Amino acid sequence: MTRYDRRIVGSCRELASGDGIEAFYQGTLMHRGPVTNTNPDYGLFWILDTLTGSACLIDMFELDIVRIPPPAVGSGPFLRSHRSGNVEPATSYWREVSTPG
Image 1 (cartoon, helix red, strand yellow):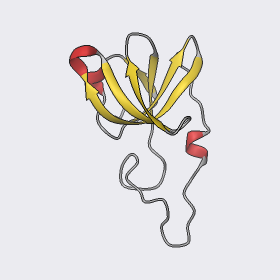
Image 2 (tube, rainbow, N blue to C red; image 1 turned 60 degrees about the vertical axis):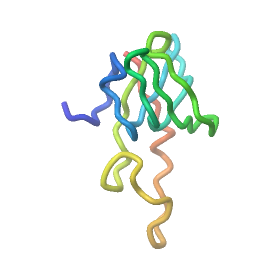
Image 3 (tube, rainbow, N blue to C red; image 1 turned 135 degrees about the vertical axis):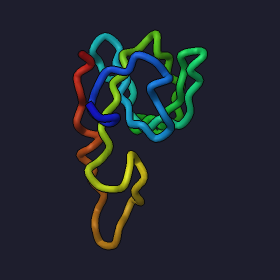
Image 4 (spheres, rainbow, N blue to C red; image 1 turned 180 degrees about the horizontal axis):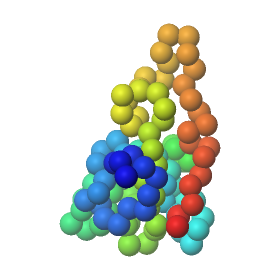
């Protein structure tokens, strides 16, 4: 399993800035986006939530966290510009919802 396979995250120590995550509550997608900061001592991390467009503080103990793979383009997760020449960015990446379990 590589670092970017879709899988359940058990600790903030498994996350790094730029990792894409989905956060579920009882099987319902609540948040999705790239990690911006972590505080592993308290089980908290921040994301830029693409569902609401705002920064969001996530509690590992209240939600099921799934790391999602990066988009197929670019050199790493979320490290591509929005436009590259005349090529439109892939938008289907944020439409695919994983399952929490």
